[in-house]
Image (cartoon, rainbow, N blue to C red):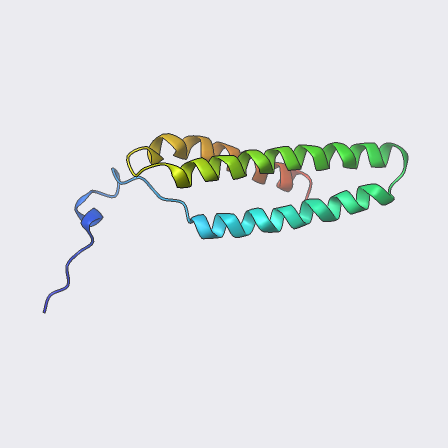
Length: 106
């Protein structure tokens, strides 16, 4: 008995859009959420300019994470033909959030 190739196998790799691993992204967003909460707790214990700076970073990370969550939700809700349209905004939001974490060394 011969195995059938997946339907998308006929599409060349250059033309097939790359699907993100949604489960891994959700897990990473949860991890980032926990990191943000730890940073917020650290900000509460800080004083003066340090607290101001940490509060700013917490707010910034929360906003970027919320945007990434929204883009991921839009991507998941989109039909197969619409997903490519949402892919760019999801990748952009993801990269912005990841860069913000990396810049802070988190």
